[in-house]
Figure 1 (cartoon, rainbow, N blue to C red):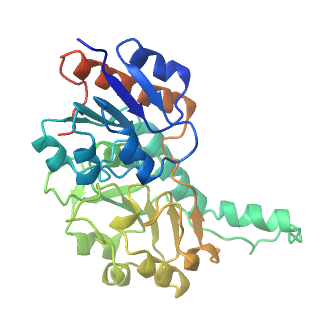
Figure 2 (figure 1 turned 90 degrees about the horizontal axis):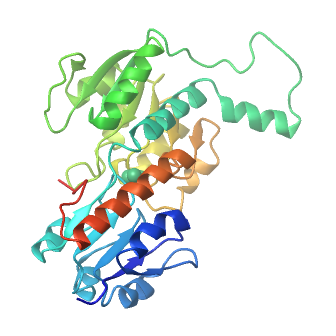
Length: 314
Ligand code: GLV
């Protein structure tokens, strides 16, 4: 049988490519972000494709990749893939859950502490030369101990965030759109969670049901002292509404890793002091990325050698 071919849309390290090369010819795109035209061209004749969050694998790509047997996402979220359509063509889809849970939860915690303790704002002030010296009423932030963390989506990552926040002395409430109950924490309706939480952290996947789950009405329900954290997907939140809420003091602050139209960031957010903005990097540690590459390679190799994938998309 002819050796299969795999397209890898990012310049992954050679250690990640080596296991793929053991079973297939590998076409690695090394010139930055693969354009849609190039993707449509290069996917032709490939049996496998390794993609990441910004690659939109829709019907056109699936149709162009008529030989595809596996689509492997280097991410846990898979809103970039048309899963039902690809599946209807007999293609196996995989993602990289679990290995990035701790890193992503740590990013949520980092954003919580960074915004409540005004870390980035303070750093900017020092660098500008605007620090006049220690003062008791200067750069006053908010404590997290004794406060309520409202977790929207208490799944794999949300649970670890809850556990870490408990260590900081926070009470945990959660809302699970899937209605899955987690007995050790307090379940609330979304409205109740928004109205009573001091910090709200989003951990639901993006789907038609969760798009703009947090909109202007949702922000209006939050405490004026609330902080909002998003490490899931930008479009779970209406970014216009978020910029409005931060500008008008409807909420106190926010920490964001993800945006509606990456890499564009809403211009209304860029000028505000009370939001910490980081560039979609929650899983970006050397160790976690290595584990993601290892998992993605095992998924692709398994499917192309007739074995079940390690982490199929459910
Ligand atoms: C990254 O955003 C991921 O879903 O893993």
